[in-house]
Length: 276
Image 1 (cartoon, helix red, strand yellow):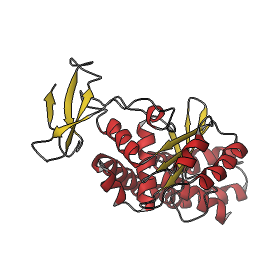
Image 2: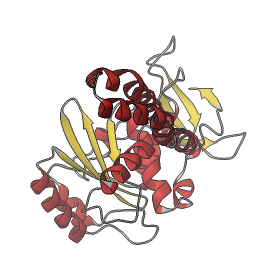
Image 3: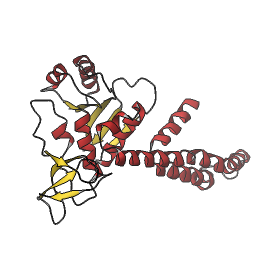
Image 4: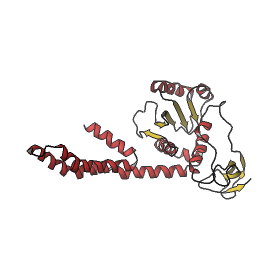
């Protein structure tokens, strides 16, 4: 029983904060109003259980409510981290747990149901499990600053993919993949995403509520070399505000949809734009 309670509480810490609030409220109502109706009213033992349930209801509700502020804080920090990560150097400053939390928040904002366990325990080749439109994708995160992800890693993950019967395996690294790894991933249900591609993906989410939006998706930037679509941004000059590079982008929303402009790659820290 202790293990089940521990597992439930851990799930609440990782779930959205409002899940704890709902379960807390339901447990209080159940013990005070629903549970009494299930008991035989004329039995002394039932009255004893009723009194005990009512006495315990505030404590049980508080136990289930306890993870809510921590879950809220975790979500807030993850969203802020996503907003402030705009370069490969920003990613390099993260530790492995922050890196995985960043990716989990990214996919949540893309509409995926995200299941991840941020702990030191063995993950079996899966750091994040994504579900969307009845399709399941597995994500393995490699926060390697110097070492490249090689073909040996992908062979092991391919076995995990086949055993799990998932639709896709996504491997994300803060660094690079070896040529052998890229060749191995071709014609298999793999998406390989390196540090530069990841920054481009994050930029899409960071600008999703703005008028201008980079036309970037996981599908375009996650495929192996040789199958990848051309990148739609090209470097041009430098930003007069922060000195970063300017890239040619295409507006996807608003009155300027379809028009091209130059924007700073330091977005959202720098919002400088210039018409083409």
